Image (cartoon, rainbow, N blue to C red; front, side, top):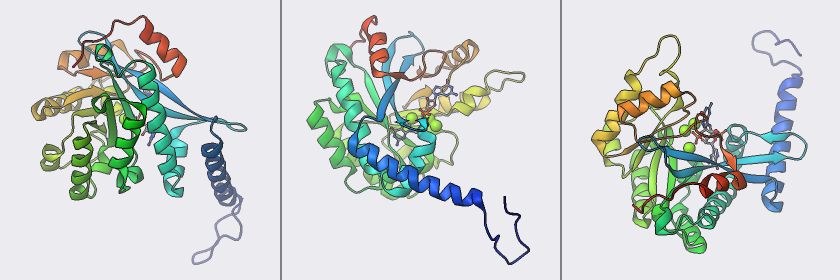
Length: 285
Ligand code: C2E
Ligand code: MG
Ligand code: MG
Ligand code: MG
């Protein structure tokens, strides 16, 4: 590794930096190819559980990339790459179509299996002018009723350019889809906007669930978010429940729904489908 040169000078050669850039360019080219050919990308599905009853009430769709050389690449690594290269739009459209198609294949369009398929929408997808049109087209093509689809956007995306975002949220709401704020509590929400946003669900970030267990459990923040959701008329979902103690604490607080390894990891479609087979269908909402 090249030592950094004296002040005002650039290091002559930094092999780490070089390989980082080359690697990113290579990975972007690989992702473009993967999107064209299909096959390397797949969706996994993590069930959402109603805390009061233990029923599965839906799934969150989480994209996976099985790279032929590098193996599984985490979305935490390739979603930012897709965003910076513009590939997030075709990727996001594929994710949306595939998740809606899967939801219909599982019978989620039928009133006797009234479940929700939640799909993540990243910042640059949310900014694209045609998003509501794309969502409406995918629903029409797949035949999934709009109220069975929930779009998740992170708090930090929603709380920048709030006026513009409000307009996008309203046109998505016009289509009839549900809307969720993901990773809630990690950004800086304006309570005034939170009230104006036509959002159905707050997803409590995993960091607050983590605080519910361990040597010095701290429930204050999770409880505050659950109460905030309740007073705004929004459903609350706890992310990342791994332990029985966390499950109990959140149920006691009146949190509505939960996801986490305690119930199930995200699963390939075939395995998630098995969960549904021996599951009593929920009553239509
Ligand atoms: P997210 O939407 O907040 O998704 C939750 C993440 O937490 C997922 O990671 C999930 O596998 C993980 N998780 C679930 N339960 C537990 C648990 O009990 N413990 C722990 N430690 N983790 C748990 P994943 O699948 O790696 O996704 C990471 C992030 O990448 C997502 O965070 C989301 O922001 C983004 N992402 C994933 N799939 C998509 C996609 O299809 N489109 C877009 N735009 N973003 C996606
Ligand atoms: Mg999410
Ligand atoms: Mg989240
Ligand atoms: Mg997250």
